[in-house]
Image 1 (tube, rainbow, N blue to C red):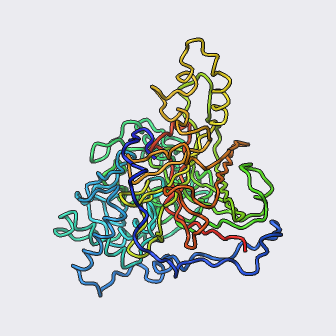
Image 2: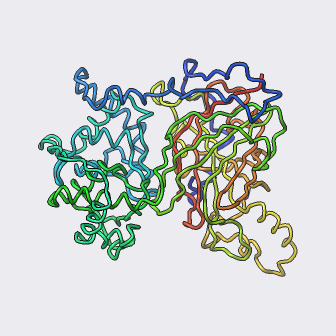
Length: 553
């Protein structure tokens, strides 16, 4: 959501016609209402929320069934053409059409996407300087890269699609035509952790001077951490490896052993294959002994349900209507590398047939909101994004919009809540006649010079701003008369709880329609953390999820 580079003229709400999006019936993907549910007298404590693992939508199981066995029944030319089509739909926005890592999203990302043309890959099971094995590329595509904007595509791609994409990626670099892939590094043993092995690992950590980059406490604050550069002369971010979510090559013992042994080519993280294997395993267990939290398992693409209730809905985050309603945890990815990122959002939704509410919760130890007379305060915030039109996730040729604010002819509808806007509106009323010639807007809202996102909504007196976009740089507020999403949020004990509320029928052509929807709506989420100076495209995000609306009978 690039509010900083907003071009209010780039989207003409009066003339742009997307009333006929790409055809996608989606009948075979509809979700049936749970049977025998009493919607009117529903007991939240005994609510049957339905039992669906979403398997009818997914290719997830196919990856396990097929493993990483490369198919032999696909013609190479057909494979290449198929891979290019997938790349142009799902990868080009970050990696660029020619694989140079310079797609349209690059200016919002840190670290930058991989430049495939050099044939240099971080995540391998092969010795440093050698090409990755095909299964290494497969693993990165389906599992993603934790702590970065690279999603896990395992739900989006079949094994055949994944192999086709690998074939296309390898076509970017001449190295794959000239060189053989490296030999796989295979450990001889897999020793378990023990106090003695952890103690030895600490000694190895010190002897190898790992602390010069990773710090004495492994939090990424070593003496060299601010001066490291990669092979492309880009600044390197040293992650806090006490957080298992931040280990880009994976947090399991085999993953860490692989990273230590192979190194991360193109970065200052060299291969330590020359270190005795027993010491590498000791280092693995020392690193894992410093984990300060559990690895949080959450789905990257899943089914969210709006459950029917027989009550009036409000924006109260702690209304009894939410008691007992099933919620869904979603993993988020930072567009810019940071420590202590918001990692999980908890999403719940209910509807009464007339209105629909979405509640979002996330942990945030600091309350960053409106602050009178301070223009250097960046706000916390959250947004919900919906794809417009009859689109179904990962079917019918992948006709869904790009999850990063849509793309041309595939618009999205965005609801954006900013912390403290209620207070800002109250302050505006209180100070309307108290300025004495002073520019109170500049004092209250900031942003005119130093903080563009602290500026009050120009479209209406509502804590939620409703917008549309068709890609980067096109985000545009809806006219004041079409700002129909209400919302409220409360920060309590280190957790934000925010509620969005809207009538189910759409009031304009650029609104998502809940009243007539049968197929799941596609939805994605974004969170801004003010203490991290988040604004505009600096945020943490999810990819598309399926939003199923179960309506009262």
